Image (cartoon, helix red, strand yellow):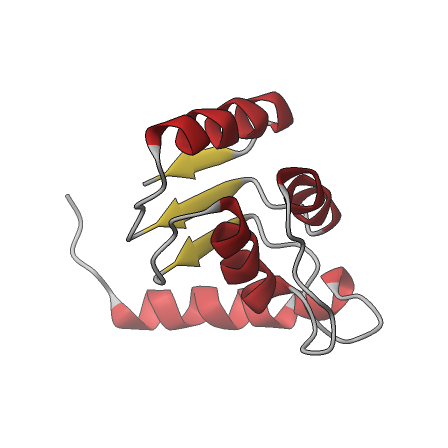
Length: 110
């Protein structure tokens, strides 16, 4: 296993940020978010959509309120992976979200 090299990590961050403009929409925000990391508690589909929208949408755009709207947002911003550090959604809703994400090719890590 290799040791963490901060200089190499900084070069990678600079490369990612320099490529940002080619993937930005008119608002200047990045519309290519392959992975989203959530630190807020996620207990409902609405909370999941709001947490993701907070990271990808401009401030004046409202978060989707249902699973269909959530999937549309994820397609629009080309999200391929969602990592949640505090998942507390019910098993029934979790199963529904996982099935929809699987159909869309989105990986959910919780």
